[in-house]
Image 1 (cartoon, rainbow, N blue to C red):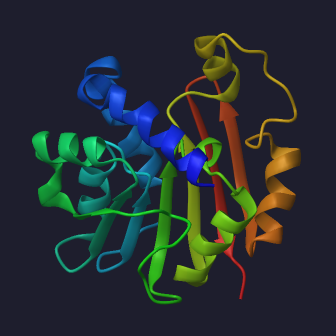
Image 2 (cartoon, rainbow, N blue to C red; image 1 turned 60 degrees about the vertical axis):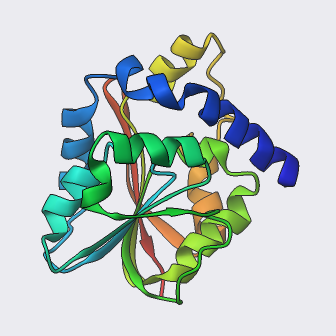
Length: 199
């Protein structure tokens, strides 16, 4: 697992400074995804693998001043860019591993993870950890601003059903970790899988 972490950190550290410039038009897509989460004023939400924090402003707007927003990322350089972009004011930023969150059980209402699942070294165990910190009935959103086919084309790879984000793979993976897949959208302009924490 340590090797996977080192690879992830190396990958994102090298790209952090140019990340927002590379994807300058994603803001409205993130806001639209957050609007589907059903967040309420006062809720507690984690942006797991927050990167440069593009989801933090709409998450903060959704939970209001009484709510709590925590941006968690493994890569220091990404968190530095989040602060540089002014998004540190929207959340508490924490450099941590989503596989071992320093949070109490059932303390979170919603977990938002953009581009997260493909970077989890142990998806089953890591999704169980996200379930641990989420109360029964809480929600998990796995998001990407483009769908699987468009992402595969961008990365020059072939789309296969072995992809963890494919619904036939994702549904049982989530179920084994304590989540029930509630809705699934894989369209050219977005990927959004919404799951509920089982009791």
